[in-house]
Image (cartoon, rainbow, N blue to C red; front, top):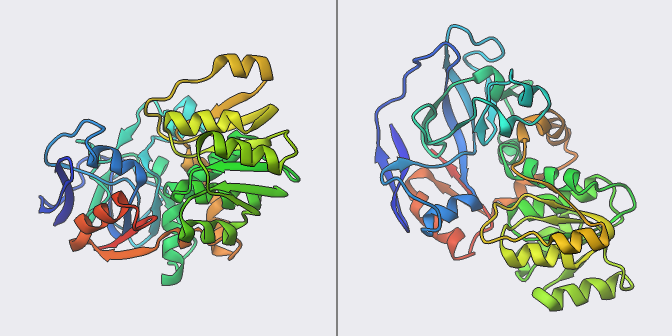
Length: 343
């Protein structure tokens, strides 16, 4: 079978790898129908995260179950499934509390236990604790939105939940990638009265407005802070969604938060320092982290299937798996928001 492998910074290849086989009682083998490239995949692509040359990559996919282990009970061959971006057992104390990304037996894709997601097939353990089955095989038009539930839509939702967004709030979203745009959609869905999106790219601005943004700010740094304060009569936002993970994005998030607000952060931190003095003086909270998308999947899947939300619009480039290297380059160069891959 073919699978995406990373060999060095900027070196993505489609490689022939051995066909996966069920080798444990909780395993499932899934034929991938669609996968995608995540913004977090760009960290190793750019050489900012350690690379194991030749390792498989990718952690977002949907597909059809081909085979299951002897102990699997909740999925069966022929089921269409959504795979959250990490594998969780579903039974430990953290999973039962709804924080599957802190599972005591957490498994990452591209490891010895679970194949990378950007390939033709994926074998993973803990099928019952990880995979979510759709009520029936979805229409082709639903696949992009269902695919976002494996990561970005659930992550944007987690940012909004962590920031305690409620009806009537003014919300600022820092970041205009797929997660930030999903955060805009989540805040609007939760009833925010005003959603201010920070974005410098016209196509992303347009999608942010379509997802529910009421205001767009194209400035960065101090100028972005000043623009938000001007829009909010000098007060700042009731809730802030930090969806990037850099020092500047976190600084901006705290700069635009009103006293007593909460910053919901989901950007993978790189060079971030938390302003504990500001948090203490102004009672600004910080909550969030790696999103437990498995906990949100049933609710968000119902919204997608009912046509209440269409987060699949974040995909603005659809490529065959054979062109995966071009997909990485397009996202790195910010020519694409998010790339969908089809085997």
